[in-house]
Amino acid sequence: MVESNRQAGGPIWARAEPGTRRPRFSRDQIAAAAVAIADAEGFDAVSMRRIAAALGAGTMSLYRYIETKADLLALIDDALLGDALVPGELPADWRAALLLVARQTRSAYLPHPWAVQVLQGRSGADAAIPGPNGMRHFEQSLAAVDSAPLDTASKFDLLAIVDDYVFGHLLHAAEIAERTSAAKADESAAQAAAEFGWAQLETGDFPHLSALAGQPGVGELGGLDRLEERFERGLRLIIDGIAAQSASG
Image (cartoon, rainbow, N blue to C red; front, side, top):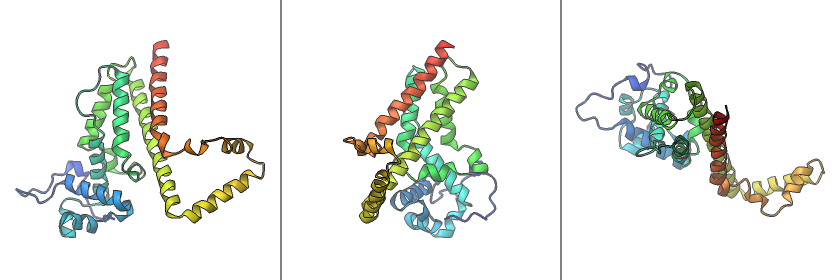
């Protein structure tokens, strides 16, 4: 991974890119290379050496662009938040606008199951200060709820609740994908786990689980195929519930 003990001159967003007339690389290219490596091999495979090789550069030359691990994480986070921006105009209705923002955010992160766990655990200045796309995403989110019949604090709460829901859903989706992939990679281990589960049900200590397991099609309920359906249902319940609460209050 990128060295974390180098002394950086403040958050990366406060520092200019290399000042040569025609820099060889951009921060966007570095972030894109890191994301591609993480998608293909997992985030642990991301290193300055690997990024440099993908870009056809020398490893040390990249330190002109990135000084710390926090720098790289900030670039990756901002690149994904760029994908989370809704293109074009938002709908006039605040509920439709917020639905669209939430869906776009989910779509941006879903192809990168490693990203939420890696990026949400950041700390320090680069985590506290959003990058350009982070600011655009927040601005778009505020624009989405601008006409909602809520005071400022309630609008912030609404955005935080929707964010919690979206990123919680993404973490769960990543867990399901990892379990599915592991089961396919090691069928014997998956079979052993299934046999252990059935043995536990036969003890009689889990009557509700036993009843559920006996129903046809139950294995599909928690799978990837129904993720989007559950996401849409939950998101609408949250937004419609808050809208109803504001109308009655």
